[in-house]
Length: 178
Image 1 (cartoon, rainbow, N blue to C red):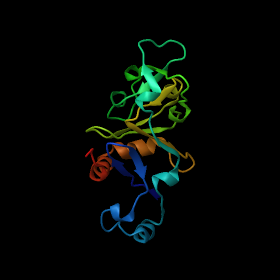
Image 2: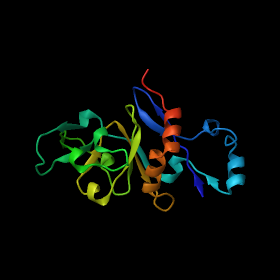
Image 3: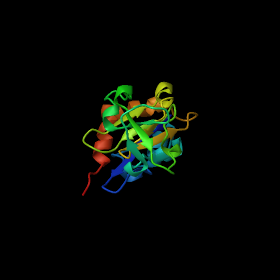
């Protein structure tokens, strides 16, 4: 059994998941040894459970275009993820990559989790095989997590983030632009 409580800090310069601090847990769960003894489990952070954790691509790396011509990619925006954590294919915007720029680190793969970390509605989405085949990149409004499937399924992480408990934790620990 693993207990996961993410810490999201959002400000006007960057969005990132940071290491969970024991002080961020509500009492009596502030004591890591209490959690380990009570639930007989290891406490792991998001960083420990994911192979990759990064923000999405900035606007300087791509240009929006009108067509889905060969060589175009699709951009994941906030409106592309519904409240159930599904990525809506029709809401993905076609983009072309700026000359000389590489998008490999932003390219979504099956099993990835995208966390919308900007705006009033923080929510997570799961990247299915179908979406991954569309060459989708995440915009800078997202945090991209690539869970280690031996330790954590992306579907479980999305379910947690989108649950009432997950939303409450994210709302409590997130901050807006100053």
